[in-house]
Image (tube, rainbow, N blue to C red; front, side):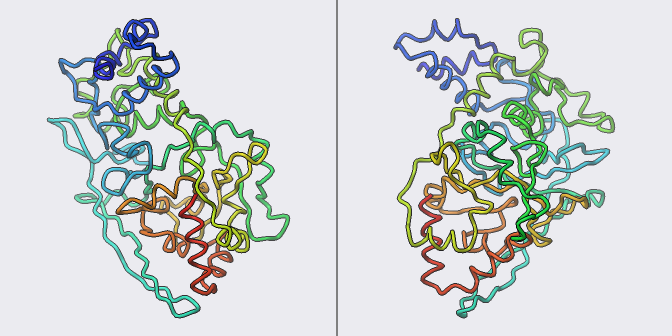
Length: 387
């Protein structure tokens, strides 16, 4: 009952109001976390609406809530959590494949697959699928970057890792001649490490994915461009009550704090034999652990690495082959899902497939994996599934 009351007041939340709604003695920190969770799960509606605390959706959007893409604060799937970043005069910074009533959505991406088979040294054959994206009713979108919603587990912990710890892992000139030359991006979040803070990450997602304005991205028309007159004529949910934004400052800060406090995945049982293979293949050169005096093990260096042409997007720039190393912690839970999606566009259906797509700086590690006997490959996969 209390949760439902909180949702009604999220658009004009204040600590005083929430304290008045706290008859069960929940701590202020706990209540703030639950309020943030409610915003995270909130389903936004288009304006005008009688539910003024929840209106302002779009006009163009990809999802109606944060949780629709980040399932249980985790990774998305290719049906609801895959977006396409672009740089287009008419369609803006991102393709929004949904729109409020009375407005046409932007071109719909159709996904096809090209299957190839990879033979390992012991004769095992693994099928890989390469996605082929085509935008319906549009020949104008030729450069884009497909990106799957990542897990948010422990993201606040990653935000607090000192930059000096990350820079010690960077080797842009490959001075040690190991073929791995990770470099720092503009930030530490996003698939291209181009987002500097959690607040920016949350604000950007609200704006581009849902079409909700907030303190860092206050335009209620979000990604509508000057060429989209119909979009700019639609009603929005900004008001004086929300400081001329669809999500007020207090509620925005509460959402950011919730994301910051999403806990890291629980530590699983480490498979020692698999750990030995992981180390032997030098996987830890990018999927780093041992931060915070050895107590923080996300298995990412949060740096950009060239992953080779097979994983490149087609934005045709110097960074098309570079991706920020994704964290591996949480695989123990994720691998229990009936369907799994790995890599930046979700193309890999298993951990073995994901490894076989590695190239560029990870080419040597991939080739070493392909040369392993089956039992040692199984050891490695079992180790990853326990993270």
